[in-house]
Length: 352
Length: 286
Image (cartoon, rainbow over the protein chains, first blue to last red):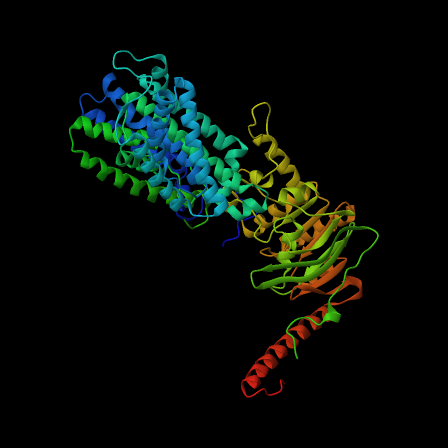
């Protein structure tokens, strides 16, 4: 490893391939700084995609066209925000789709079968979701089973449980009505912009938590160097468990909102798994590295916008849905390659 | 019959002084079948710098980890300032006034210099507990300046720094806290001559102030005589020598280590011979 000069210039250029950029200075080094912003690349890709569809699809830019975009991105922005916290910990939560499926049925049961009012029933369902997260977190941090395996187990268990308690039948979501959208439904998913507001609010709050609180610092510390963090006195088990709880809570919340939006609650495990993979895709495209230690909620939010634009644009263009997955896959690969490069430049460590 | 372990008479037993801040007796620690510490007795006087020497695998780091609350001993007792000391965690040890620079430095590559310096003692605002990054940066700058460590930028991830700079940050983090017992696990590894001298000067200054007592794992005998008041040699899970540095010499330490190496090799050879002999109808061991 090269020993850094003891007094580098105030704006030390990144090492390695950055040499050519730095020499030309000015606009280019500014451009590089933007691109090495963790979110820089995905912002560029999203804008390009957006402009492409705006130019090539007639109804894309109209009010109703943009409204149609919302359900394609808002839920994923929220799910990805939770997944980001877990992924910065160098873990993964595969059970978000199952929690997303499970929570609205708990909500239904508590409201219809147990007779609780809407809000307490929802709170109960969210607590159930958090218990799933608590279970995941404790198994991973205390028992020490890898999060991939743990949450894979939770995924199937919970999907099965949902099918059992729902008798695999679709139900009408409590608080919704075809005739009139009530206040509860307006706030929690039924209103046109409801999910958008929740997504923006949650993303802002969680990005603040990540960047400016001890919770955020410890999340990065545990993901970046788990042994070191614990030697420094960070309670790694608490940090890990807390993030799994957060992730599950958000998954449950999105599940309920989507059930309210659709007015029906459908026990469809395969749909829930598509939700899972798109949430992880949004986080990954948004610059969160699977090996932990880095990632942003804002990046995941933009990643979710990218997914929404792509899906909505292809829909309106009348292109087969098959293309969506094709492009989504390419986007993930490109984003990952780029993120690896960016993290190399940022840390100047000369490795991935 | 030859034994690979240190002879009984060489094992340093419990010792005390009136001004002990830390004392440990009969510490044992095993990892599965491997016995890392067999019977460790050690004391540290107020304001003293104790050098801990020993080969790789002798148990130095294990001892440090027990003292720092990171691991728990299987048996044995510890006292800190006259009180029984049984840290439940690193934080607990720190609350008791013991802080550590670990061999792996415990730095988080992705966090900035000042976030690393303040890891687990972050300054936060009120009423919303946001981090006071500006204040932390200011104090980090002051703390580093005081220690004479030159880190040009504090808002870069520590991954960008050189090995020596990282080590200096880890040391600065520990000494800028308010610990009165400081444990350093190889603070001079990965350091250039200049940076190493800086850390040694720092330790000399701390010693002069007399506020803290220090246990330091070192590999280089010259450093031991430069920086330490007393030296303990840890061999095969026990302390086999404990002398003020004024009463010993590089030669003596060398002799002990070499002698121990030869003895252990001889014991291993004769052990092999014995088992071979035993195979031939109970022949006498060499």
